[in-house]
Length: 166
Image (tube, rainbow, N blue to C red; front, side, top):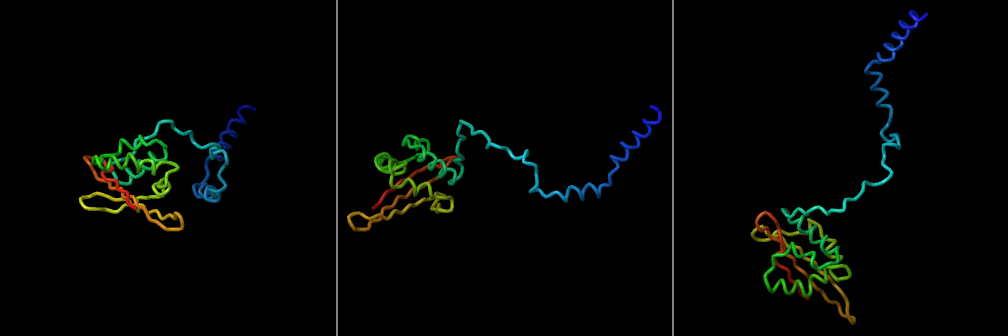
C-alpha cells in the first residue's frame, strides 16, 4: 500500500507547484493594494529618538530650520550656536529680538511660519528673511519688521545680521 501512495503523493506535489506564470500573475494583479492585510500596518508610530539630529547648516533653509527649532525650545541660549553677529547686532538680538522670537513673543509665530521660499538671495550669496508685523495700539495701526541675514561662513550658514525696525 505504501508503494502505491508514494507515486501519488509525488504527482500531487508536482501538480501543485506547476502553476503557469500567467495564472500566478493574474492572481497577484487581482488583489488590490488597498486590500492589504492589516497585519502589515503598524499599530503604533515608530518610537521617537531622544537625540535631536544636528541641523544641516550647509544650506540657508537648514539654518532657518535650526533657528525655528531654537525658537520653539523656549530658551534664548538655543540660538547661540547659529549666531555670528557684530557686537551692536548681538546686543540688539540679546535684548530684544531673541525674546520676541521665543514662545509668547510677538515674532514667534512669524518665524515659525517662514519657509525656504521666503528666503531672498542677497549680495555675495547671503540670504535674508524678513517678517512684517502689523498691530494696533490705542486705535492706531503700526508696523514693525525684523530682518534676518544669513551668510555662509566656511561650510555652514550663520545668522550674521539681525535688525528690528518700527
